[in-house]
Amino acid sequence: MIAIDAGHTASHPGATSARGVPEFEFNTRLAAALVPVLAGMGFTNVILTNERGADISLTDRSELANRRGADLFLSLHHDSVQPRYLSAWTHEAKPQRYSDDFSGYSIFYSGQNQQPDESLRFARVLGSELHKRCLRPTLHHAEQIEGENRELVDPDLGIYRFDALKVLATTKMPAVLFEAGVIVNRAEETRLGDPAYRQMMAESIGAAVARFCAGDNGAATASAQSCLPP
Image (tube, helix red, strand yellow):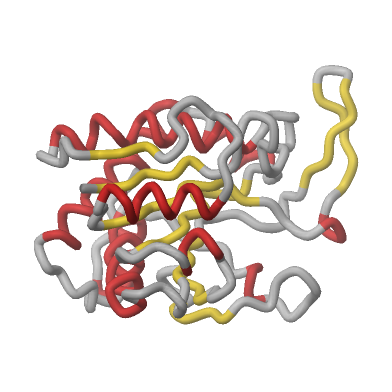
């Protein structure tokens, strides 16, 4: 069983994109694209932690996955940057904030998860699938500034260790949090909003799930893999 967690809620939607779109909308769209991809690969036993977008705590999300006996937990998010990097602009006559300084995905796991080694294994497999499709990580979370300073475990694959991420630390199964891209970056927001790009990303995740469940150890390095144009 695969637990898919679309991060945040309708009333607490997370980050705001460069064009004013709530992060939660990006998260739910990616989750909706991922479910049929997984089903097509034979993973029909999938649970969504917050299918209706209701207010639900981080603890409730992990407890649902634990109670249902999920084998893998994947929390889907879209990224922002620290306020110091944001600039003002106007989109459709409304003031917005953006930063074109950073782009790319990132993958987090928690050393406090009950299966940290397996969580890291899935993170490596996921990173390698994204890299195979010419997607590259953002490394700004490793910057030594307030609000960042995360431990960068694998710069090629964009993997960070972040023990305090509660939704990962409290799940009993392997778990990662995936930031699909930086939505305050204007060009990346456009890509992430494109259905074809979203489908490609969902297929990357699905391929990673299949490899992980087949026992792939994720040992292949990014530099050793071919890059297929997305």
